[in-house]
Image (cartoon, rainbow over all chains, first blue to last red; front, side, top):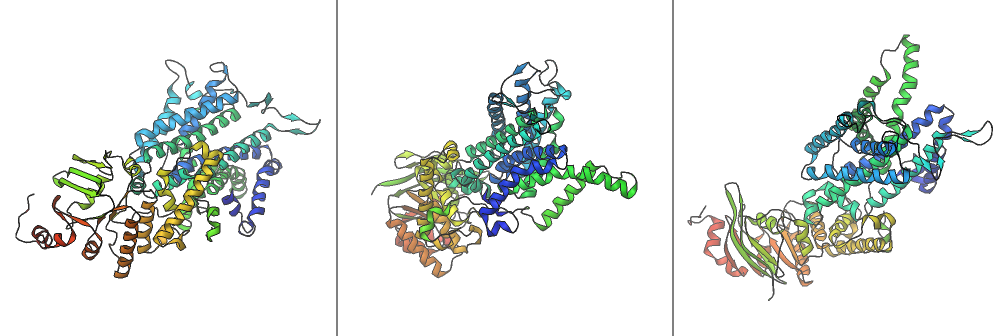
Amino acid sequence: MNELALAVPWLGKRNPLAARWVVVAIALIAPLIAISFGRTWVRVIDFAMLYILLALGLNLVVGFAGLLDLGYIAFYAVGAYTAAFLASPHFDLHLPIYIVLPLAACFAAMAGITLGFPVLRLRGDYLAIVTLGFGEIVRIFMNNLNYPVNITNGPQGINSLDPVILFGWDLSQNIQVTEDLSINSLFLYYYLFLACVAGAILFISRLQVSRVGRAWAAMRDDELAAKAIGINTRNLKLLAFSLGATFGGVSGVLFGTFQGFVSPESFSLMESIAVLTMVVFGGMGNIAGAIVGAIVLSALPEILRHIATPVQNALFGHVILDPEVLRMLLLSLAMILMMLLRPEGLIPAAARYSHLKHLKSKGVTQ
Amino acid sequence: MITLLEARNIGKRFGGLQALSDVSLTIRKGEVYGLIGPNGAGKTTFFNVLTGAYTPDGGEFTFNATPLPSGKPHLVVAQGIARTFQNIRLFRELSALENVMAGHHIRTNATIFGILTQNKHTREEERLTTERAYELLKYVGIERFATAQAKNLSYGDQRRLEIARALATEPQLLALDEPAAGMNATETGQLKLLIEQIRSDGITVLLIEHDVKLVMGLCDRVAVLDFGRKIAEDVPAEVQKNDAVISAYLGGGQKHAH
């Protein structure tokens, strides 16, 4: 939260408290602004929230613990499919969200540990390759587990997942306030996602400034030295993988129930790379960076879709570059420029791993 | 004198190279024990085996009359042995204070749940860790750099920070791997005072060092390694006169077993 407030241009450095409230206000009124551009844009910011959750989780693994994970989307898939199994007509199970969400989080955490064990000794490139393979294995499983016993319904995916129902309140129904004023369901989901993101930020920022966050940072900077001062790197790596996976799993459940449909193609390698790009683009090891990266890079393709096609039509009379192609082009260009100009990301990590308030009397300041 | 650490017949082989063979030594509580020898004699290997970074091929360590686990560095640290590295290995991106706080990890036990809820135990532990880390920075004399990133500290200060980090694990035995390497005479003099201070605070020191003056002035007893064997162990004055030691350093006519 502090990092995010400090990242607000101009105001952040001068009045962090005001900047903090600005951030909160923007988060709260974002859908109201979005709706004035059309319903699609509310959907876009809904998805941006899910990506923030993913980016925060991956940032925990990559940014804090220094474990390069290219298969992160697998945990998103585990979450989404858990929701699909437990709350859809597919198995005719309709468990409530309070059961689905914790279960999915547990499954994702277990998947994280399953991935974590074999890769304990690996680092850098080797780790990236194995995690990439893991992500693909999960996707291919989802794609092919429809025969001989139909578990995942294969490439068709699973349809009509139950919507989120909180205390008997169905979030997928618009609320009719008066005859011509209704609160759209997209708004309701937005605030649900926002609450999850806020919880995640609170948890992760507390984790960062704690013995665990410091141990992760130590392990990331020098694993041998971390071992030599008594840090149990095995447990901490598994913890990082499983906690990161939990965020992926929770995000997956929200995605599945929001979308009402899951299929393996949502969990391709490109998605893993997209989330990693968000983390790197925003600033690794930095909560604010992950958030800003996720917002910018999840909104970018939508903006392109709405701008690129009309612009090209107006200029050339027909579409030369498909928005999807343009997206990859611009994304790559952005990454290259980023690496050249700001290698530490949009918001470089001024990461803190300690509270200095305890030392105020000794004249130590931040 | 009470024996703190006993090494019995430690052996370690890397492929065709016998880095350590049958090294036995005893370190008593409260002394500064020097480990010297020419380059490649096996001093650092001995450190690595002792601290669990390597598993020995043979022999065992007894610390405070209990056997030390091999190949499990964090358990060795928990038993009370801390080390520094020959080539400084700090957590470069963390501040000096956080480096030392990380060193206190093994003596803290806040759980994920405690951290999430910031319960009383976690907050109290965090406060103690911070204050203790600051005290240790003061102890080694670099508290004015508490918030500076470790990578921005000067060479001598980085060495001191590494010692502070090792002390944060609350060791009984502090193993220093060439702490004076690359230091000038003034810095070495200050380091000597620091090590003496550490000893007088009741921590036993195991010291690998090339600076003969420092070793002779500081150590109570010295062991000399050459080609992975212990060729002498005595008080510094005697070791200096030992023929085997002189020929190991100066390459006298004596043949070594390979």
